Length: 185
Image 1 (tube, one colour):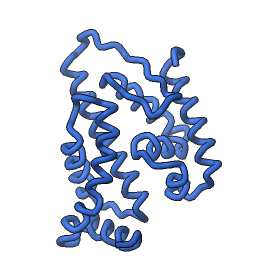
Image 2 (cartoon, helix red, strand yellow):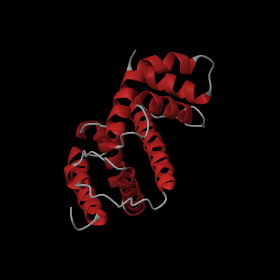
Image 3 (cartoon, helix red, strand yellow):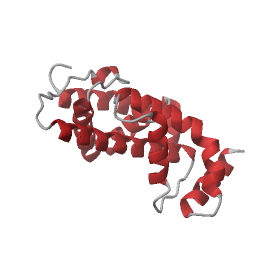
């Protein structure tokens, strides 16, 4: 099945066409699991990759979304997974309620990184939301590179910009996140 067929099937699934989601999931499942494994590695003990894929899949199919192409779908999937992990980290932090949880330091300039503590994931989420507000394209590059695991060329294709612009946005975003996350980075 070609890229245009996949896009058509993605849009049919998003539109609720009977049987489209059932045909689509086997085609994209392994890529979604790979994304989930990367994200779960950053937030261990919050959710299993399979559960993350299934929850993200439910969220992606629960709206009026339409995807322009494969990269657009996987960016939406990465965003859904990120939100799920942040929600779980917040719930875990609420359970601890001041139980000595201190913000951990995360070397953002060495992304991809491992986030061993949900508090760190929450700190990163706050920094990313600020980046999304001030520099939306840089935030999209971080989402696609860090959370979706796309290569720089693929990010350029998804965003419709040059490879040089993607590389520049990646460097600037990493620097801004490092500065916002703390002086120890």
